[in-house]
Amino acid sequence: MFDKLRSAFSNAAKGLTEKELNEKDMEDILFELEISLHESDVASEVIDEIKSDLKTRLIGTKVEKNEIEKFVKDSLISTVSSLFDAAGKIDIFELIDEKKKVGQPFLILFVGINGTGKTTSLAKLAYMIQQKKYSVVIAAADTFRAGAIEQLREHTNRLNLKLVAQNYNSDPAAVARDAALYAKSHKIDCVLIDTAGRMQTSKNLMEQISKITKVVKPDFKIFVGDSLAGNDTVNQAKEFFEHVHFDGTILTKSDADARGGAALSVVKMTSTPVLYVGVGQEYPDLKPFDKETFLETVFGSLEDVSFEKPELKPEPELKPEPELKPEPELKPEPELKPEPNVISNDPFEGISDDEISKYSKLFEVTPPENDNEAKQLSSKIREWIRHGKPTPDETRKQMTESKLELENKELEKQKPDKEEERSKKKRGRFGFFRK
Ligand code: GDP
Image (cartoon, rainbow, N blue to C red; front, side):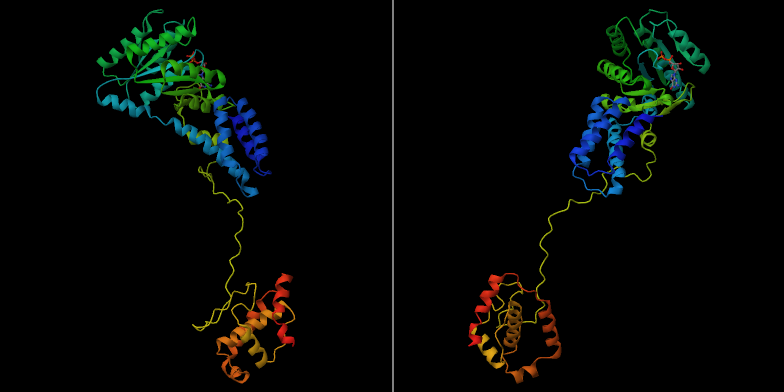
């Protein structure tokens, strides 16, 4: 069942696994997906929506390579799932109950082309209604096709149901009205009205069905489409919808449907739900359409599928400049200027020439030969200022071992300055040391 649709989606997912999700690659894969979906009887409008939705989800997305297939699959599932969600869900039995509460029969009109399985589906629904303990009567309002009344009589005999019928060529609207009156007078819960599936022209057919609709004002209209007929079914759905605005669809022969696209197309084109699917020729072979079952048939197990967009790996962003950690500094005395950040261009910034000179004399410092030495020296001078500019003797007393240790660590961390120009400039300031 739905093999073609399954492989169309699966190929799209697999096709992207080895690719970067850029626009060019996307186009190739989406083109292949488009062809496969066409072959699966998915209508062009639906394909366009699936493609553009998938494209929006994927382009520019960064997903781990081993997660791309799952990501594409999940995206497709989300798209298809939301197509069905947009059409809503209808429980016919809730509607029947509402009419029942006000003592009125619920009238259901069946429309569709001959051969699609309309009569069989009507009989299957009658059986389901019976099984749920509601009463039901059938109206043979296809007075055009020879054999149509007999076909229905066979079903009603087998199901032990009342058939309201007249002669061939009688007014189908009158037959439907009779059935509605019968149901009212006999407190029947539901009336199923069969209609012609072919007339001299399609125009005649649509006019006849419109007339029945005006006369009996059905509560609910069901379009029956053959899921094997592919695009024909989609076109039929469009035409019937234009004339009678049906409320939902029964798709027949799903048991033999290898393509699977009809459900998607009809739902999208008419914005009405698929109510039931026919899965065989027996009365119980009518199943409520279930979105999850459809998705599972097409995509496999939904167990670990996230219907929402999976969390995306964020775009690699321009890395912000690493935050420069300030040098761990000894708390400066309030009156002293704080030690400038080590990345300052001038290691002696904030230290006066007098202080440099005095320190150099006291501690017999030779002029630094390079920027690294200049930075080390500037650090020492700052430390010296911070401690009240002590003499070498006082310094030895004041400086605790731990502070010295910390100072050495700091000095080790300092990187050499790359800018030769700056280096020359700084060394120039120590010209007086060499005197
Ligand atoms: P109508 O002309 O639209 O009323 O079509 P019928 O109800 O006579 O059905 C046409 C054929 O399709 C019959 O042979 C049905 O048994 C068959 N049919 C209808 N529904 C299904 C279905 O869901 N599955 C299968 N396999 N056959 C179906």
